Length: 304
Image 1 (tube, helix red, strand yellow):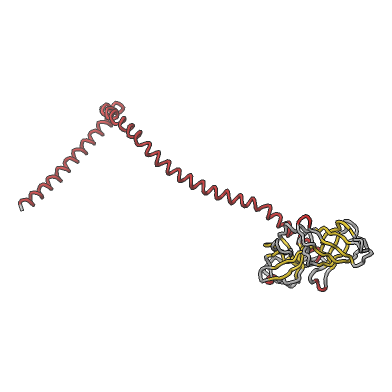
Image 2 (cartoon, one colour; image 1 turned 90 degrees about the horizontal axis):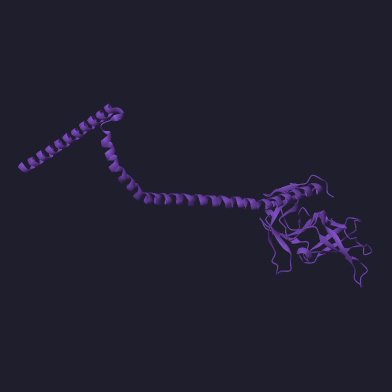
């Protein structure tokens, strides 16, 4: 009991002493503030304040100098992270803008192709399903074909005419729901009925199986006594019910005329209007009733 009471009394005395010290410090502070305020510009506290400043000032300066490298290091890492984030954001934005800028010529060319198809549809009166070339037949094979990204779901079926804004491309060889294979007029298995624009003489064009600058067609006229004129334009003369070729589609122009010693007939070499090495947007001639999930361009003019 005695020890406990002693500890209790000690604790009380300690608490009372602490309160007394706090009271003395508060009273001293109030006294110093009162004296400082009463002194005005010439406070009696100024010498003490100056002395304390002379002692504390160098310590603060030294401490600030010592701490500055650590503070600057922390600021460097913080700003470095911010800079990294800004660089990453700006790089991504730069890449996106560069991609959009590089896409502009392609979009412009495709728009020009679509405008050409619209013009062709208006001039011929045919309804066209617009499609893009998404594949080309293997070069090691002898066939010249391309694959387009539209098929039976868009009303495209076998033996339909395929063209672009330059002229005849070929005919549909086969079709699935979403794609179709097109046999180019340059293929050796391709035979197209053609008509000379100058005299309306008809004949048959066959491909040589070659693409690029050397891609040509051979024209044999039905009337062997007729000699084609260089520069004459050749168009399709059409098939029954427009299958596989509709009439009036430009094919190319006569580049040269030749004959063999054994034959009296003249043969014409036709330079096609279509650049088969840069095929992109094409149109497939479909019946007007066709309803599909593709862009259908309907012509308003009459057939040629």
